[in-house]
Length: 158
Image (cartoon, rainbow, N blue to C red; front, side, top):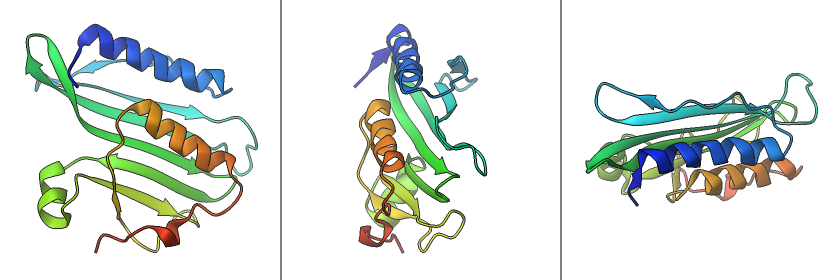
């Protein structure tokens, strides 16, 4: 879905407010313009709770490409949870779309580490995440559940 620059700036601000309302520490987000004409952002938030060994982090990054008439469409994303206190990671990514589509038949992939830094698979097949809210909420659900992330139930992209 194409969006105007003002709509994307509002969306970015909304993502930051959403995380702040959960008690996360979020720096003021910035919408960047690139020489290619694309726009994008990267926000990283510290989640509330244990700081041992360091706080859990959640991040959202998106790239939007121009489609003409001052409109943009999201072309890449990365939503990541690094849960240091629970020593695990979960992520949803869409980048290098043509490579993943030709090699694996999917546009998106996932990362899942039941033990941080020790993945049993480098990339899992994934379904697209439609908005940053969807990506962040799925990761927040993982963060708030003390059980396993469920990596064993995902399909490894080999």
